[in-house]
Length: 314
Image (cartoon, rainbow, N blue to C red; front, top):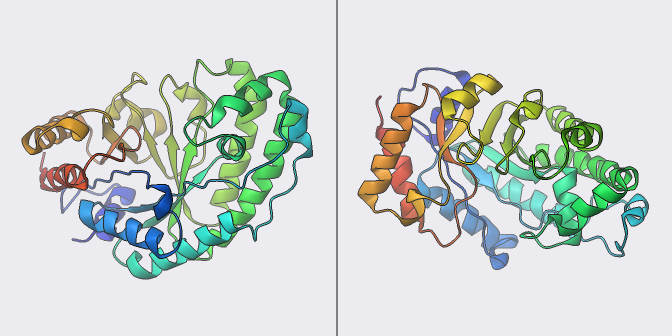
């Protein structure tokens, strides 16, 4: 059974005939984000881990926006060109990945919501929210005007990506953390833009795989987000895989702490943790992690976890 067949069983909610599907992700170094180096890195990682989907990492995320000094500046940002290299290089990479691996595995393109993309356009990836988040609190109307602009650009980018033959989008969503904004603020300003963006992705006819990125999330605010598959941090959100499956009522991926045993354990410990996790999980889940695995963790750790999931017959 190949990765594409195993993931198809997961989507269909069928009983597994070749073990539990599994996948884990890592960010790539800056030198591995473009051209042949990026293609090799994506395919080598897929082969080295033996996982059951191929998620194309997208760490440039957004063209940079100059001149953001105050919240009011967001209302005047220029519209990104779809011909910007940030977009065209990613489209070329997606097309090559599909050509090389699309028959063996579902290929998902990583994409970020307008809110996260806007943050990355003015800050580094690690500190993506250091400017956008306080600005949004100070002048939500101006900032959301900019987010709506970015949403339109990303919707066009998604159409271009869909034409490459990818199977779907893996969408990183943030903003609904309890500690970030009051519930009413999130509902009024961020949620409508998230929903517009997700509906734009669905209009491409591709699968939408939603990753709720973070801990302390108001998960109940996301139950109506349109998508085919959900991945979230069970550690730090007070929910089990069974609880997440019951909440979202769609296929769920997750289970392992992305900073836990899979990073530091021995082969025996990692395999035992997979066994323990799957025995406590409902049938039909896909094994994954709360978020990306740190880059320094060897790929063999991920392969051990994937192999243990494939061997599981609970």
